[in-house]
Image (cartoon, rainbow, N blue to C red; front, side):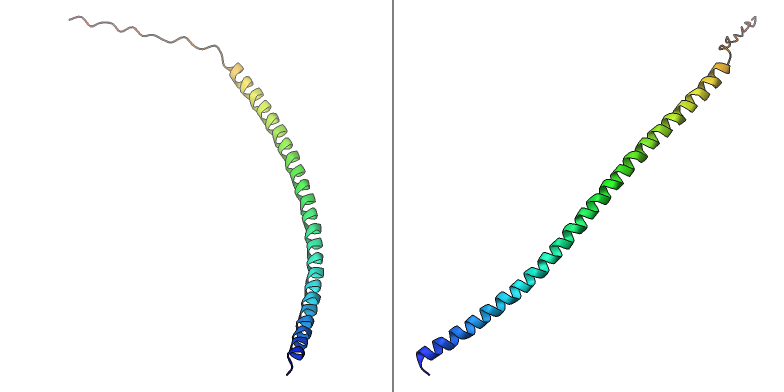
Length: 102
C-alpha cells in the first residue's frame, strides 16, 4: 500500500472515532444536565421542608416553655398554700434531767 493511502485511512478512522466520541459525550452531557436539574429541584424542596420543620420546632419549643411556666406557677402557688398553712415553728421542748444524788 502506498504511504499516502495508509495516512488517509488512518485519518478517516480517527475522524470517525472522534465524531462518535463527541456524539456520545453530547448525549451524556444532555442526561447529566437533566439529572442536575432534578437534583436542584429536590434540594430546593428539601430546603423548604427543613425550613418548615425548623418553624414547627420553634413553635413547639415556645409552647413547651409556656406550658412549663404555667406548671411552675401552679407548683409555686400550691407550695405557697401548703407552706402558709403550717403554723409558726414550735418551740423545742427541753427536758431537764435531775441529777441523781449519790
